[in-house]
Length: 433
Image (tube, rainbow, N blue to C red; front, top):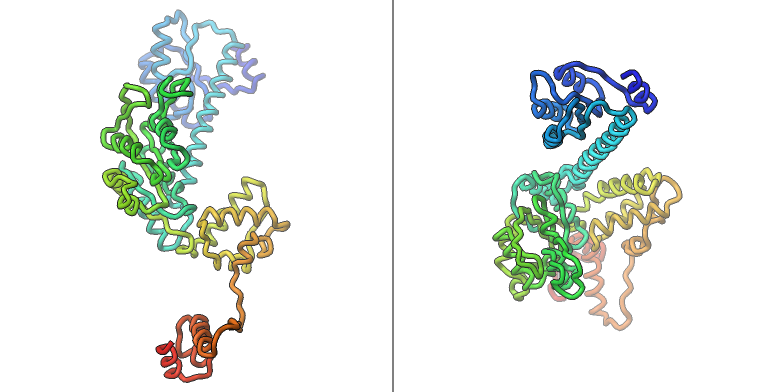
């Protein structure tokens, strides 16, 4: 054992020696144990019970059993119970050190996976969806209410509002969070290709099908499938989708085997499905199946209070991703962002922030570094209005009144003062206009 310890020390592997199952449990609770080397035949305790207890205390620990006179049956039972490996004594020290190193590599991969899952869940925590405005608080409350439920959800909203973010927030806060989240863009494929993408196909099902393909529904089993741009799906594919929603089963294209799946369906569209139903382009029965819960994601122009929060979030993200050193945005630049109507919604805002950060030489985003379309969109605060040359005197008077009322936001008393006429005179002229 002294030779073993010297080799372990050389490879910087620390060793703790204990003499009972109870000591193993206590050591695991207080020391950073990665691997346990253990005699297979333990006194007064079943091997399976011992393993279960260890995994309860520390799920990522790996256990290697050593046994004198081991049998193949012993090894199989140990591996079934969750052991990493099984060796017959005596074991060469170098082999043992290699086994330990590989077990540690496996453990590190396990820990990386756990950390990645935590990070992903954090990214899509509904409490972290960036929106304090009333419209977004309503959406967040809806996500919070239905995430734990195993119900289908229809997510609607304009392009760029964050429908996929909502879908991921639902999935990663649900009991299916550790299972797959599979996305299908229904508008990116023609009819035949979409069916193959969704349901898979058998070898030889059509020209070019040289191998069997597993579809997205199969990949999403036990998890969530997100059908984006559902309004672009053809009627024939809609019929097949309806069957999956009703029966939880389907066949691959060109196949006869019935495949059963347990999935949650989230669908999204920027189209008016009720209008498509009236036009006979979308099945009403499929709409009812998808629209168990409806979440309407508001456009950015209706939640401008969220713009400063979103900008801060994007700055932090791009600083980390692209190693920028931007600390913030000045008031003038922020006011330009608040004035804009954002037809491309949150996605357009994100792109604008990224572009400004790439151009800004210092630590602060200034107005001049914003994309040109934002600068050109700013209102011109002119105190005069140029009347078209072809207008008559009467038409010019009407236009001046209209322009003044527009500037005073419909306040007739204020408009009358600006025009230098009485309120009744203005009211009369408006009625005659």
